[in-house]
Image (cartoon, rainbow, N blue to C red; front, side, top):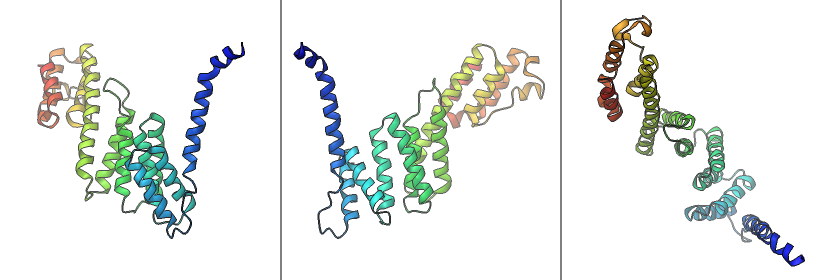
Length: 256
């Protein structure tokens, strides 16, 4: 009976032992500075950088945290702070990405004029970018990514990271446009042209277009004939087809 009970609980015991071993390994990196090291902060930072390059997220984080928590006046502290954010970003879980956002926000708050502030702003946007959902789903994180990338463009116009940021910003905006198109298409199928034009206007120019402005002026959309409403939407979209490419072309085909 005892053996059966032991065998039944063995998997749980193994998990507990594994977790304890992992925790022990994570804390073992603390206090590993050799005696006589003239620059212990640099030693730890370099160790963290090597571990980060090897994608050993937990180990790297421990080294970087030892720098930020023990050597508060160290010149390596800001870079170690960024390193902690990078470990969370590399880990990539939902919880880790939230922690990455916190690290990069704190960096920008503590070191707004630091030489790597542009890097922190970029990574902040990437932490949201990594959480973007499909166009059919909630787009909160996509909007946050757009906001942070736009902040980068405004604050760091000469940064070497600008080409990559602009590429990510375009991807984020395209995701929002795809989401707006799907909502607009839903409204169009239901013949709710007010909502359709507003959503298609967002796709075309990045801002709402007044409903039915070319066919009814300020009159209510409900007083317009269906055909005129569709023509109004098509007229609103057509000037922007070169800007937004395939989505605008799809809208024009829909409304033609």
